[in-house]
Length: 82
Image (spheres, rainbow, N blue to C red):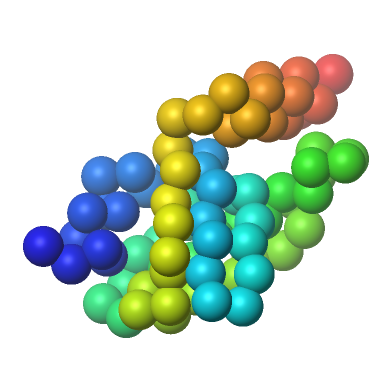
């Protein structure tokens, strides 16, 4: 199974992705056949930074359920409510 197919079940969830040129926390927006679209989150201000298009063949690591990600989800939700 290709990574893009596997990531499809995590669409619209926050995650950490490490790829060949860097890493970022963000919300998975779209999964194409050869790319992943990630809406990045600035971890200092908990605001949306922009959208990255990452070639799925360059992705080394994807983390969906760590304590850092839960903290980011909680802080982003609090910022949107307040």
